Image (tube, rainbow, N blue to C red):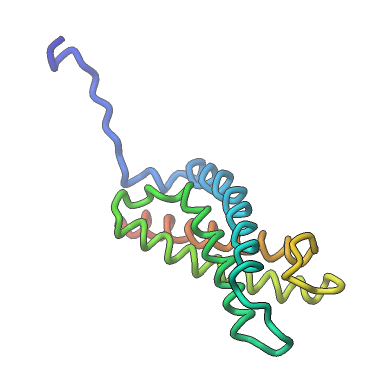
Amino acid sequence: MTDANRKAFLYKTGTSEASAAILAVRIIVGLPIGLVAGFVGNIFNSIAVPSPVPGDISAFLARMAVIGAFAATGAMIAWFNLFESKRGALLVWSVAVVGGVLGALAAYYIGDRYIDHPDVYILNQRLSQAVLFGAALGANVMSTVLAIATSRLAR
């Protein structure tokens, strides 16, 4: 077969993130994986991170950071090839970690207002579930914002 007979399929990376369908698929895939990874992070918290006493803000923030980092790492399965480079993957992961931590903190403080008996350290509590969902959602939202911003700025 000669080169003239073969069909050429070009992969266009510049416009792939501009599609709402691709972003929706990435969020649909990244959200449940981020939830599971955040749950693993919460288990890691109960094993390795010391339990905070009332008023110990550093231990509380360490737990939120672990949950956010684990949720962002899980969400990276859906967002790993956004820039097709190691530096780009590190950028996406860093932005997702920030989003995961901010999402976990926001979910904790919102859940603290509306959920009785707030205790984020017991895995079957509704507040813990809200924090895990907030971390996974925050990681995916920040990755989506990064993808949209870079496609609009033409990388």
